[in-house]
Length: 483
Ligand code: GBH
Image 1 (spheres, rainbow, N blue to C red):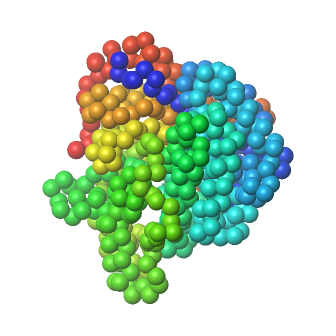
Image 2 (cartoon, rainbow, N blue to C red):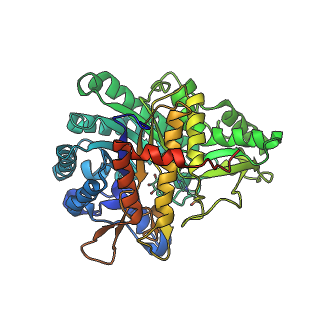
């Protein structure tokens, strides 16, 4: 068959994007609650106060999971729902009860949970003490993680510590378009990324030394990456720019964890050179790991990849006078005009980029076990229940995953579509729909209805179990407009 027998077929969500119940039962506020209630942050000043109301409508989500025939479901815990002020001093038992029910319901219908501990929603109480910029956050995250392993780890066997540290660091602290909305260019993002790596590593070591023997689970962090390749393959500058871009994105987090325990040399050199150029007098902007820090190298039991799209890369247009990550990185990303664009401007529809990226990961990060923890395609504007283009996208992409397994020998163990249902798409509010299920946000019952793409995905899952998918793929002609 084209997929290993116990291949994980999943879909994902994140707490703030679906749960609502933002003030229910002693839940503490998170930075996304705060951010959304500031004017001008989110599309039409929308917020996740109610979202899909999964806090009350979990039964409906479970029905969707059944209809798709998933073997796995990826969800995230809201830190502030479990620990309202972020610390284990106060545990919100109603929050524990909620996630216990979700996990138990999944298991009793033969669906395995994959749980993300942190998907963008820091307890506001911790932000008030410096948040991810403060080194103490690593200890606080570790306590939260240990609390979760202790409480849920008898049943949860796949853990993601932090989802997309790149997005948290850069969009939240350099660009300011995600919570906490900070724009301290050229410094804060590196610091946040550093503390995220420290926090992740502490939690992994806690699991490894205290829980692993009994619970027998696996822990990683989820990194997002586009497939990147040089705009002109025979141009040295474009090749170098691509390497630099990789170092500042995937490499920023995957290199320390999987290869050396430290940041890519290209990244550090570029930042140092830029500091000198603009006479920056502060300390090194990219922090160094010291002997007081947890060991970073080797702190992942598998490689968790979020893939959405591809980019061509060339050098940036010179640099700005002030320090910022853009100048450090100094690249320009372009889309090939032949690549179809979907609902959101950043997402060119490039299934074959995933195969390329998987092969790159195999070669660069020492052939790890890989889970594709997010992949998807959105629609905006006119709503189509018969979303044929998205249905085709899932099929194409899953074929690419099978080729990565069969032909390139990548050890892919699972695929999670993003997302189970339409939800609160961060700064885009409800205007962007990534769901396999449509959610009617104008209906007080928030009815979920399967899209055509959901049907397609459920067919694929069924077909891979009975061999029919194999037949389809043999007939499919190769067409990849990447190099
Ligand atoms: C994922 O990030 C998130 O994990 C998930 O919660 C989210 O719902 C999903 O994406 C869909 O967006 O606006 O031009 O600055 C994916 C990685 C990186 C993709 C940042 C969008 C913003 C481009 N994201 N990028 S732009």
